[in-house]
Length: 125
Image 1 (tube, helix red, strand yellow):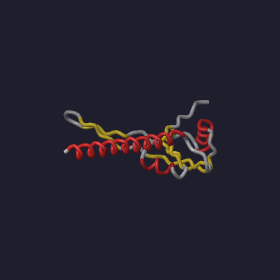
Image 2 (tube, rainbow, N blue to C red; image 1 turned 135 degrees about the vertical axis):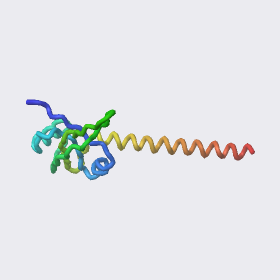
Image 3 (cartoon, one colour; image 1 turned 90 degrees about the vertical axis):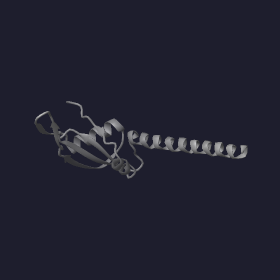
């Protein structure tokens, strides 16, 4: 049996869905819902409540040469929307949340430092 490759989709829309316990993965087009659920439960050790799938058609791409152009398509891929049981989470998406929180903290620290510097300059004048 071959291994199933699960690629989490990292975008603003999927991040917003992850707050509602819905996670989105890219899989190969020949994988069905049952195979995807088994693999997700095995890898992330979570309980899956619901699954939806959609096949995303590839986009048309053109390349331009010196005297002509060629048309082609990107490959089709399947998206799997997985709803998890309350209390379960997937750490891949949690890492994004942690990095955003760190960025907010560092921005606040930089803001406070700038305010202190401005106060010192004001007192010095």
